[in-house]
Length: 452
Image (cartoon, rainbow, N blue to C red; front, side, top):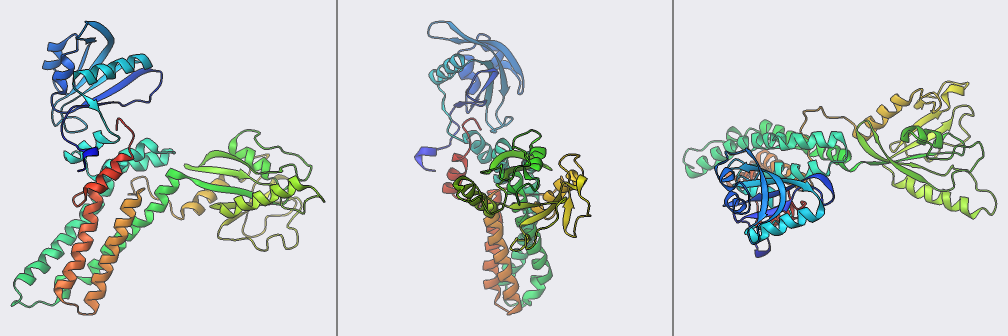
């Protein structure tokens, strides 16, 4: 690896909790001799040296140069091979004052620890076989998750959900490739390629990887969220519905047309999906010379055009204006029959009846939004990816399997088929980290926070 990210087992340290005042701060250490280095500046050095793995030892950190007490702490001991990194390590639980944290880190540097680089603890865990790359990525995804669903999916990945799917496919490819390579070593025993490589199994493998690839959209949606715009004519009930979503009077509600002069936005969660919700200016011809309203309508049009989903509201008490729905992108739009509590007519086909006053139809609207955004929601135990790197490698593996299918149909020679099988296997190996490069590892772990 390059010198800027050289990973060995030398002692490292970093603050694992956020930098700021708190009741407790956790300072992580890892590397050969961590226990001994901390024991040299610990009031109960003998107890720390004799501690079993996963034991907590209470005592005082002391500067050995002048005997000054630094902080009263609890030290969690993890012996070699037992901790997060797979190395000997100690986690120091201290009081969460900023001056105290600074003093402890300075003490540890003097004791022989160096500052950890971003992601160095997790990279050491990977290099020491404590986790594969899919699990390492899941660590960062858990920390950055923006919804409960995203957290649950990342936790499933950390538990090995993706690894199990990938390893199953790899094992099958290894068996196929092994049979082909044996045949290539003993060409005198000529066997048809289709007897060694079952086209049905290759197709099934490709479909399984395709389903896993498609889950990327779901993973990203739960983690990064969606943009939803409320659109419609003036006084269609957009601001009232917006306020119902955000559970407060965020937008002005008035019978006066054109009250919303610009878009208003707020972050909400809809059926577990993080959403940025936009209340846009009502669609109508702006009052003559009203440049502010004209600009608000223009900006609202830009927001609507960039939204993942548009809720187009029609005032149920007034009905649909002539040509009102012309030009709507039905794939991008959910039609809402608003003010359903005072509507004299039933909603037309394709509309969801909703009353912002009574809440009638609101749960059904939330479910419709979720179904439209997701298409098909995975089960709680479904493997879902949230990594561009994994998605791209899955696509590469599918393309290689597609080449195998094409080669079998065209009666291509076994050595050509073996190349494509190997490419598919290597692509899957890169996902879990069996096949990877130093540059890939350095780039991936550098995006982690310090202390992870």
